[in-house]
Length: 262
Image (cartoon, rainbow, N blue to C red; front, side):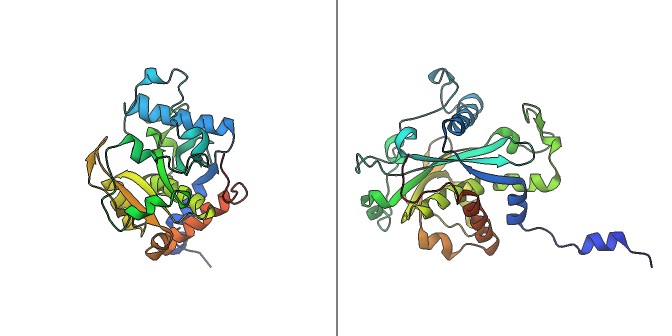
């Protein structure tokens, strides 16, 4: 009996976003000097060389760093499994054990202040909050096929499959979930983030509902301070994104130590 190969292919289930993302990417805790150097290199390439948010001359070693990195930050990298290239980075900034009144990055770097009176009291609980910041995604993993300048080293956009490209718009979400996973393991009550409004809308589509905590300011685009607590993270989370969060927690499980600081 002949088999209809086309019909068989058409009836195969489409992989979920979570399955696709975990197939092509892995979250890695940057808990060594070598991996942290990769974080700072990505940030330099994105913030200084490409977007011009920072001055290249301020970082002669081509490593973009600030005062929050050494003592208060927990860094994550996103590894593209097939190529071995890192597709992005993010950090979770927590309290300074030596100075519990130390500000979070958004309080120090921007003029935005928390206006939402339901959220403002959270800032008094310094040991139980953090801030997701310094998310950076190299151009190779942001641009579409055929866009100019879409290479890093020997890796180019045409080398990616269609399914891989489907994941690219969701790389920031994966990195935010990685930072959130660290916060969950550290038993934080919630996290702040200074983000573009369009990113907040993108996250909301998948049930990651950040509450706007400040006025909108012009800071490398239209941005505001947002906040999400533990209950809020899980309240609206779509099942496939909950599955993605669980897979990210699995990636980080062996490296994370609850309540520790580097």
